Length: 562
Image 1: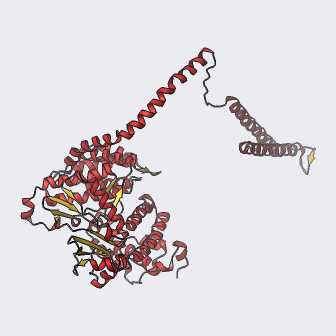
Image 2 (image 1 turned 120 degrees about the horizontal axis):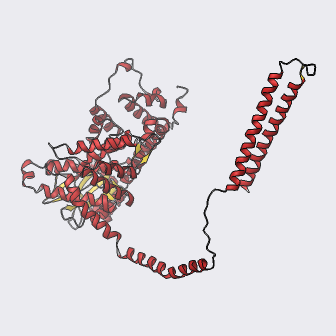
């Protein structure tokens, strides 16, 4: 094997298959330089016509990723939200990745249920043998409880946790290497993006987290009547089995043209945008995967399912996001750029003027699309790309928000083709801001402010009296932390003395060199005596100057330590 192989990437023998799969993808789809720098060429099949091989189509990349399993499918879906990292054609292909798989035998499902719920509880369930849906991470079956309630069971595939953990461990090695060795990955924060992806995958492996998300989001969205979520059945929920109530409905993507005409699509889409704006800008916890396959129509309401992928936002980020979304909807590029810069991190070579120009051009294009409603999600994702191109790193959560809004744009296109998301953002922003101010002005915060004001008023007279007494007694002192002029002058005098001594020594050396050519009877060591004496004096002075400088430096260091 190549001698630099181990030096380029610290290889774990257990992950050789993962390294090979990723090396093949990078080599096949245009990043051969990364493969060679990683020392992974030894794992690739040798091909005689490698140099003549053309880059494969983006759809072929999506097919290859699907074959690698659930971890890579989720990673591909994440990369589809980063147009700053991959080209648009590949982003579109990865966005259409289908998380599908061959259904498991019903015996395997029964084994997982018995292992997780126990034999008694699992036998109390009447589970349909045919699955409602199959995916690479889980399989969904309809079931009924002893009391007749209809429920849905989401059962994790056997061995999935071990497979995902191994994949994540190998991906972490490669992400770390790419971040350290390539400017591209360092510029776009691949390490931070992978860390967010790792956390999301680990949360999805524990179905109890999804159950808690269902409870929390149901409570947060209770005020929006048009939105419903299935309630989990805690007694039948474990880390590998999620039981929730069955909601009969139709996928948004499966609605007929006649059914869409009979709907009040504008009202439903407006409620959906309001729900997600509330999650993002007020609650700080939002469902990050509302693609059309996870959105059902139930009568005159919309049901959200599959809440495995959620994201959280800090209050400071929420405020900047509100400013940014309002600026995008109102076509205010300066305000949008200002909000993004406040959220982001500027690298050393950041081009701030170029970023401002890019944001202005992008928003101009966003608002010039008169032939169809603007896509807010696409605008947010392209802002990510503009920031990355100009050396500005934005929070990784912004990519998930862009992906979420892009999915909402797609749903809006199905239910209400003429819906304007910019108008929806402006319409709901005032309400969101008002409620946020009301929340911040809650009873507890008012009490806290009142206590601080009481302490200030209580101590103010005494502090004023002490100040006036000092003024009357001519004892008031104002301390200014300024430069110590005495020490400054001493330091400058030392510098001037050293420069003067250096000039004198230089003059002695120059004079001695000139006198070397003057014949004289007085000689030392076979050379003119005066010239040699000047050389010796310059050498002694130079040594004395060097010793003085070293001694002063040593004393200064000791004084600083003491």
